[in-house]
Amino acid sequence: MKPSIVVVGSLNMDFVVSVKQLAAPGETVLGRNFQMFPGGKGANQACASAKLGGNSVGVKMIGRVGYDIFADHLKASLSAAGVDVSAVHATRAQATGVAFIWLDAAGQNSIVVASGANGELAAADVEAMRPVFRGARYALFQLETPLGTVEAALKLAHEEGLETILDPAPSQPLPAGLLAQVDILTPNETEALKLLGRPMARVSPGEAKMLATGLQQMGPKAVIVKLGDQGCLAYDGVRHRHSPSFAVEVADTTAAGDTFNAGLAVALAEGAPLERALRFANAAAAISVTRCGAQASAPSRREVDALFQGQQEPARLT
Image 1 (cartoon, rainbow, N blue to C red):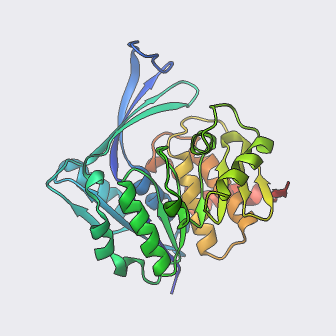
Image 2 (image 1 turned 120 degrees about the horizontal axis):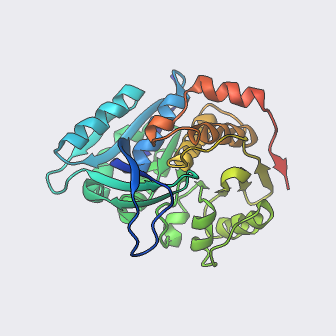
Image 3 (image 1 turned 30 degrees about the vertical axis):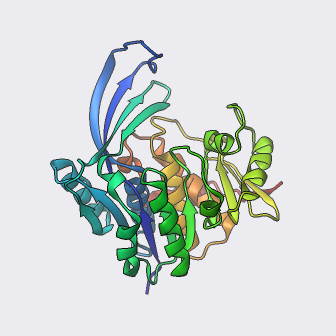
């Protein structure tokens, strides 16, 4: 039986406007083009996991949508990628979630999310989906659904023997009880600084060591700080590992972190050691930033294997 991954999280329709530069508060800027893409951090991670897992890893999604055309499009997109969406249920209480994304010429973005139906995913809903978790190896979580639901789902996943990976985005304070249920916490540098209550600043791999150490002491078994073009820094309570990034031309950073988490989960579910899983995740994220869209940018397994094999460089102990 092939290993499987369960993703508990959000599904959004993304509305993307390209601009020369991001608007300052109170400023109006002209956009150059407008596109719609299926998104939501949970759905992005599920889609990328299915693409990266190919025929070797199964992926199931748990989430909420509304009764509208966006819901149909989102579920169809996930199904086409190979995701089991039988646990994605509709609610009449809210419309399907949406995200408004402004993308500048350098590939950086600014995002506002209206959660909609994602906010209706309750702890009781996840408990009713307990059979979905059985037999799976890893569970992926984010913070675009209610925090109480995330905490309950993390606990349930552990009860069913799964390893848990939490992407703490969007940033918000996290209770110690929740972090204690996390096997791998994967903040980017901004999220890591916010969780530790530190001022915003560019983070070097050396400084990331201190962030990872501080976060690991808050409860998770391991922490991986995503550093963008500097790769990532992992700490498991014993040693630090820095895995460098791949040199690529950036077009759009949207969902790069989601693709990283998907690559990490797929590699670990297949039994890869952490060093190789970090490198695989970096390769997947690197390819994703070379093209536009959230789920549309997620690479295939063949693409990642080609980049991964062509630029092998092991993670370094620091």
